[in-house]
Length: 238
Image 1 (cartoon, rainbow, N blue to C red):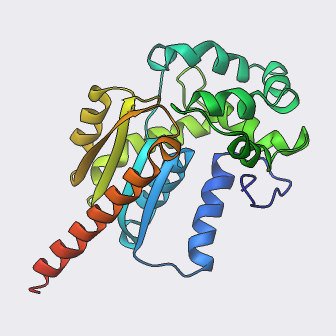
Image 2 (image 1 turned 60 degrees about the vertical axis):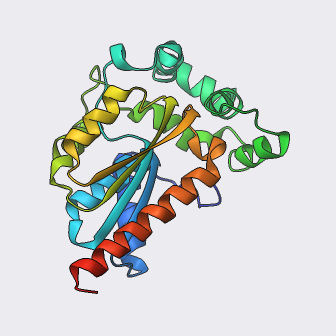
């Protein structure tokens, strides 16, 4: 909610608002046996749903996804001061909502290739006014960094602790140097926690991997879903 062509209701756009909309969407459309494809904060919202409704989640693919808590020491060094400023009362609102810094600077800096003006205009489209950028401002303030152990931090910590309980097939797509999943050690961290994890290395990438590797991501997910389907047929005696 508040992004793309979704509506912008008068809500806080906090963690629990977003989780509620994800769950409400799935329930309203009566979606069953779902496969989740998650990126950034979608990781937390999707993993949250999966932990509470594992019987309704067939599989999870994710990349550059929020699924663990952070400290400033392991936050990406080149983004550290910018995101500290985003989280300062007053300063963050000016930078994100008045100066539109998130759209104009942060988004293109998370892509290896240069976004075209047409592509940038698509990113600008949902946020034409200061007020419309509130959802953008909320997101950096929700990042689960240990200097602010609020309800969102606790919710993400619950996901972090709950990952070993997710036994459905999972797929991690990652790239180097990455931003959230920014090391082989973090890939190993996921491998140690998700019992049925497959890993695909996309090559070079930062945060918005869907901009640099759209075809590779789509093909990897299709191959993985085919593999899941074949294994399901074998287990059913097909």
